[in-house]
Image 1 (cartoon, rainbow, N blue to C red):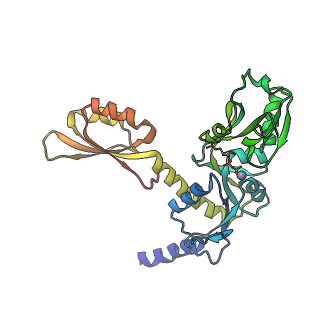
Image 2: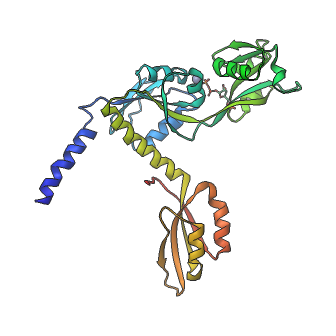
Image 3: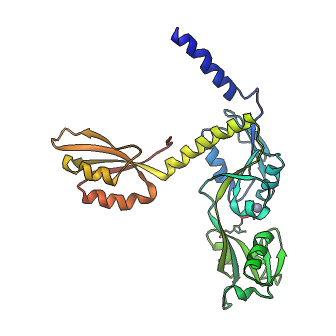
Length: 307
Ligand code: PRP
Ligand code: ZN
């Protein structure tokens, strides 16, 4: 009896959610090629979403989740999300703030970290932001640059160009540049030196403000998976052996998700302890654990982590 009642309820939930022949897919815009494209694709794959990889396709539907990918220039993504050509988009905050469209930031993604910076010919002496007075600055970020200039009361000319900004001083097009710096190698290759940071940026998901009920459901399910993937990356699974007398101290060092799992060892007075440790705290914690008497410490990557 119980089982019979249970089955139709479950089927109807699954039906509403995953029978995506019946519903329109969530359209996700990602960068076609560039700094963000590979990691954007990878993130969706780590969420268990499978795409057939046709070369040079501009859009593709997932095989096992109600989403469709649109491959676009990152510069165009904010506008397309505002207009609902795409429902959501994955791109850098730099582009979101530059384009200043009516979209919402739904989640920070932690990859494609970079900064928007001002750079000058490396042999020039830098005297502070006043250096830029009466100079000509090449950039693909005219809005963010003019906001910065205004805030710092600098009068400079902006030369807007859409790419290869770093060569502008070398070919006499501008005195300095305002562009994205990641590793810094593009600046170095072009004889430039970073002198001011205007904005720090990372990849984010932006969304249209008026998604319907169905699309919101798909989005929630996608965000749930993305968070599980990200939590897993931020944490490590840790196993160690310790004398029973150290357990209290070790539990204090390793609070874990709820509290550590403790199992007895065959050797009397010893136990094995399992927990989770944040990746960025992990070396500091390892030293504390050793000092507290822990031995045979193993640290293992986690694939997915649901809190
Ligand atoms: C930025 C910038 C440089 C490069 C800097 O381009 O314009 O070309 O990244 O990276 P580096 O410091 O590691 O050398 P972006 O990927 O934003 O390119 P796009 O303007 O073509 O989208
Ligand atoms: Zn771009």
